View 1: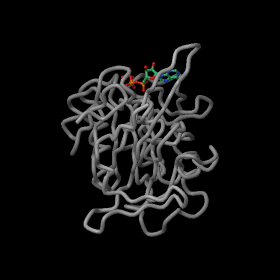
View 2 (view 1 turned 90 degrees about the vertical axis):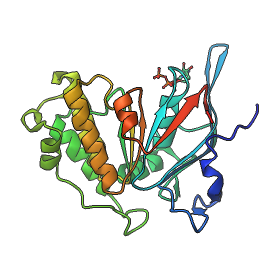
View 3 (view 1 turned 120 degrees about the horizontal axis):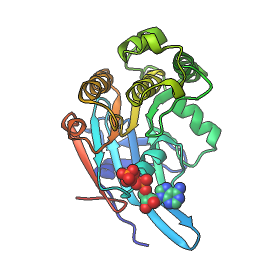
View 4 (view 1 turned 30 degrees about the vertical axis):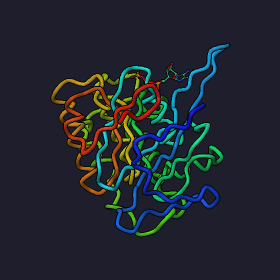
Length: 258
Ligand SMILES: Nc1ncnc2c1ncn2[C@@H]1O[C@H](COP(=O)(O)OP(=O)(O)OP(=O)(O)O)[C@@H](O)[C@H]1O
């Protein structure tokens, strides 16, 4: 197996796999999100897929990065590893200077709940809770325990009522996921992703099934979040999403194309 360096963006990173802390060259702003040489293998029967082959990237606070590439190139796998929902087989993920990868699942979940908002293609609503309860649960989970590093929050948390209003779902607050349209589900998923006032937002095709107006609305909410200082990484096929990105990362066959 060849170790491929990804974007090269992590070249300014000096990292300690032992402590899980990270430092950057003094002239560089500290990255909110760092992936360093991520590998991910899958085995199905006799077939082995190397979904990520040494992907490195960084996202700075307030920066919006779009990850694009053909179907099957590893975008969702990358996002899962960055979110700590999946463990890379090699390499490291750090959020806000803390190692997220290679920790017990419960620790990853705790760190994610405090710092990271995740919007998944499969949507991120618990089916037995209504929209409002889903938002409140994400807010509560994000508030348990002290923040890993104090004084870094870009803004005060937004209440469930305000979030519902922002995503245009005030009237659907009592509805369950199974009762929502595709567009409503996407907006509810975004409200859940933003409920913990995250420093980092990871979104997988956030506007995938949305009409133009709803897509625009979702993009405005994401931009607001970046404007408040959050690092945004968005997996997308949409030219409108790509258009709001500060930087585009092209994935090809599990590597960052140069
Ligand atoms: N759980 C899994 N088990 C086996 N193979 C997997 C698994 N998850 C992903 N893969 C494989 O890894 C590769 C990357 O998949 P991934 O879902 O990350 O691609 P993608 O770029 O997000 O694709 P799309 O744009 O179609 O959503 C694909 O070949 C896929 O079949």
